Amino acid sequence: MTINFHIVKNISNLALLQNIEKRAAEQFKSVGYDSSNWSMIPLESLKRYCDDQRLWVAVNDEHLPIGFAAIDIYNPYIHLEELDVDPVFQQQGVASALLKEVITLAQQLKVKAITLRTFKTTAWSVQLYKKFGFKITDEKSNHILTMINNEMSIGLPLADRITMILRCLP
Image (tube, rainbow, N blue to C red):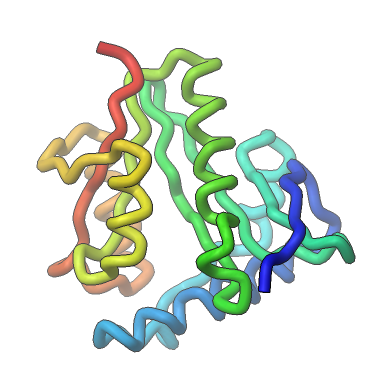
């Protein structure tokens, strides 16, 4: 089943995004992770992402959110903090459309690179990012170290986490 969706920069009920994040995190059970004790993005953070135009939301024809992407800007980098799609709507181009929005912003801002952290064991996410040109890196810039500390504080298992980077400028 193909769905119709479009990307918006603003949504009134941010709690719906937390529900998407939680449902998407449940997919990690298939690779041995229990996401039930992981912290979700707090509503105040989602509001800040929205207010600062650092949030993209994929909505269906009923204007209900089905996925979202949130970024942090660490000049000269953009860090993809979160990219989630409701499992019901995965494999239909939603994540790719959201990622294209982030890449377009990076090009407009002329940032050095886009970085992200993900699990090396989640082949579906690693493959998506590689499709867009992201590469696994050992780079440990200050913002990456900050992300690693944040991941530790919210309970993510760090052993299988990797950093990926898409260089935007030479």
